[in-house]
Image (cartoon, rainbow, N blue to C red; front, side, top):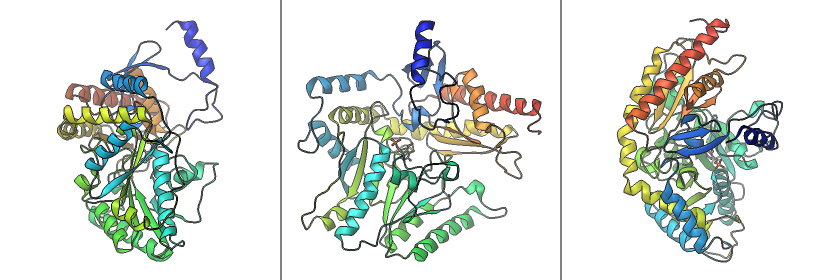
Length: 458
Ligand SMILES: Cc1ncc(COP(=O)(O)O)c(C=O)c1O
């Protein structure tokens, strides 16, 4: 790219209000332009190559630059680009619904397509409201979510999200939304065992239901592994015990598999295969097309559908892009590639190596916790390993690490004092080595700078 053209694009980009941008800084700096992508790599306007550590936004599952997906998208556009899902059907949406119902656990056979993950979660919650209204219990509408959870950016999904609310000038719904604590075992009390910590979380959840009233609590929504909350893996049996409590009190269990679905934990859906539960509803997006094109899907159990389908009632909910044929064609090809190339087996094989290699980061004094599951990881930085106090200074440490890692050719996702990673599922051992070596160097460099500036001492 010529320098003049790059400057022109940078200027034009200042018209864009980017997600999660600080309004004060808007238009004052040039963002890195990504102009090319391939395998696990992204390339900037100067031709510099970066490992895409977060896999885009937890979505680039089969790797960048896949020509087969490009071909599937092109073919679909040339054959039939769009038809209204409100009045017609398309071959690809029907085929994809059939594949998803095969891949999903239990009786989750009804598929509602959405444009993305937020609208998938919004749909699941609106469905819950419709369900209880039809069943004649309009008071059963309360939703329980968790601190550190992320479920989207619509009004309702942002309200159930459990992150950063205090720093936020947006409005949130609060009359029927409740949060319980996040299940981060690293943040358990001193001298508390992980089992006791788990018991405490389970008790907190059931106490919350009893406090609100089981007749009012309609749904619990949870990511199996909290992704942007800092890659939090709950203790063993935590998920199953929450699910059992939901069943006991007739509360819908909504599993938000927007990140964990389509291979990130080595399964198409992890709820049953990894955690032994069959949710009432699963939401998915991102990896369903490996991020090549937007799509989300809500999988609803036959049991729920049957119980509300006796009398006539309009399902008064839908999006222009529900089941967009081009997105569905991309998803079908993506799933075909995941199966054909045995990508789930590859994730199961390489994930232990990825986590073992990441453990070397413990050698660095500010690294307090290295955790994760499948190809998801979080590295939590602390002032010292004993106190575990988060390393949050003038500028959050993860942003400093991000600055250093960019110099070395690695993109990470900085979340205050936590760096999160979710590389493409096709990552190979040498690429894992390269990624972790770069991260090691970046954290070490950021630590040295903190020491030099007198902001931290080891
Ligand atoms: C767990 C989870 N749910 C839902 C969403 C929202 O998805 P989208 O950004 O596609 O609307 C995200 C996005 O990061 C997510 O991580």
